[in-house]
Length: 264
Image: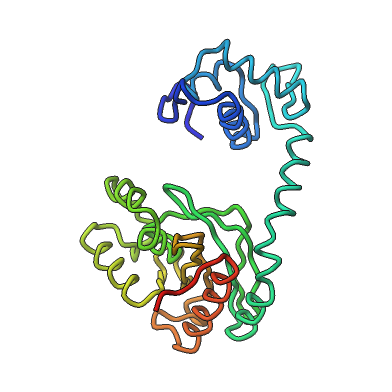
């Protein structure tokens, strides 16, 4: 969350009221400690009076709560319950469980489904591996696009505007193995598109590798990624073809659930 006073996420004054309320909720959800009217107004780039109207309406209907000591606002139980209902209706991870379990049982490594934003990939669901040294990740964990196998897929298969924007910034280097130059990254993305999967041996964490395949939806648009994560000992820099084939087969099965039809 940007510090109060920044203006990078200013809201378009022409946006409908409902969308502004959602932006208010999102800002508060990303700030567990809460925000005051002034902080939120500065962060969103809207007048304090307008910010206060949104906060008051959302608090009145139980979506926000206000700390009487600090006057800061936080998300409330009504919003939490709404979020839980949304999660229950987002049943991809439930529908995909058989495919995920078959993949995990075939290769023994931790299986990860992730979505993405403009600057990072975000873990949605995790099925822990069965190998002697199994890597685990928390849902909600997020990683850079140039340093993770999933992120390379986002840059390769995601919206061109996202790729252009990300590659216009300095590339963060997480380990000595992270790709941090544009020439190297462009060559890597060409390889990813050519073979249909990505890896990142020790590029995000030392001693850890990941291989990932895209999850595509109707029209061939990128929904997210399916990845295997494990110790470099069990998931080496040159992965076993059996592992890659199992990963791509599972990703294809889930993509079909999302409405993707491969064009021959």
